[in-house]
Image (cartoon, rainbow, N blue to C red):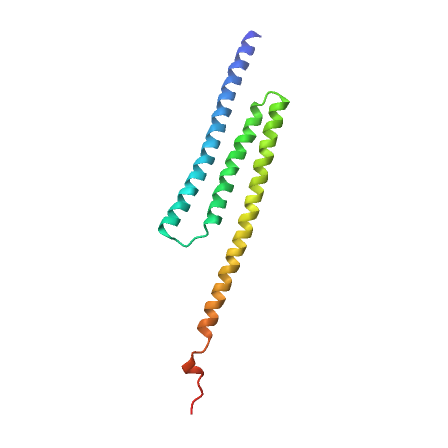
Length: 140
């Protein structure tokens, strides 16, 4: 019986280490995604590239939050009491709400961007199809 208790304790320690390492890895990936996205935005500003930076930044933050949220879900595995579980649940709810709001903002921004492009395209097409002054002058 003592052998099984020892095996259980060793397995629990290894499991805890693996989960803690996974939490750190997911948190690190989330931070790296945010840093990469901010770097892309700064590069676009410095090179004066015409891109929708708000959309790019929102995509990056939303993607990073998915990893951070995964880390919080893993953290619930190691929670020992209800106070800790409650705190983690609040963090998960907050991050889920932020993710939802960011996805909604990305969708709205994308629709506005597409509508703006469509209006610009229509204006260019109308300008091309508009007869010039030489063509529209009646012949005498």
